[in-house]
Length: 361
View: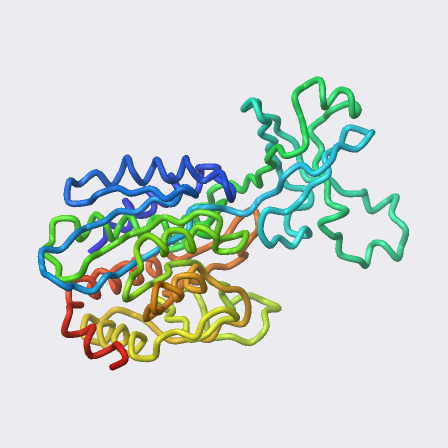
């Protein structure tokens, strides 16, 4: 079983790494530096996804791919205003209302960093009709204190630079809760690391691939490249999902403190019913909290992973999170550990015979 305090420390470490889509290498290197057991072979694809392969001695063992994406949402500089403020293009889906007035960090091509904030017009000088409107990404800007366009250029700012959200880590009085930047999907990455360390010395009957994918937030692109290398029989995405336990959400049954959420359907994937049932049985047998849900929006790396050569039996195991794609997301450690334990038990008991029972004949 997990040491929840140690798990939380590792999650904080991963959340405090800055690694936007296409710039995930710091997270990849942290994984590589942590998962050092000689039983894992490390493979990289040409997009930057990192694959930890634990080969089995049994012939014709089923290939199982378990993937969590490494990237976080953020912004790219699309233009510099004559006043010196920075106009932005989102990297991933972001409702700009969530970032207004919060701290921003500009990272230039040369690695120079500037702190600032996501700007807005003060309510005192807004037209009444504008107060009622939500700001759009086209209108969003960041202010790093540059005097004008020339000052911004002279200090090294340029189109294509990265602008990160900078949510602080929050330790709640309820020790099961934690808040922080890039919870989507550093919660999944921390769980993936926990799985790797829990099974690294076990004899297993599957050909196992644990994968940190890139560019999920901009179109599940790293999953497409890594699955083309692996061609798994079974593919499992490990990712956060929206939690429906706050004021104002549409109806849904995901919530914190309920355990691992087994996704049945989203806009890109219909999960394998036999695989869902197999995980439900594991959860019941091992007294691990888990439940089914239908996603009311979004998708995961499973959308690409299902298209392994000939198709893969696919499932997303979701980690409920409040406040997705904002400066600070909130998860329950117990949910993350439940998801990890569920996958660990799956790895321990899945084999060729169980695969024969699931696959189409």
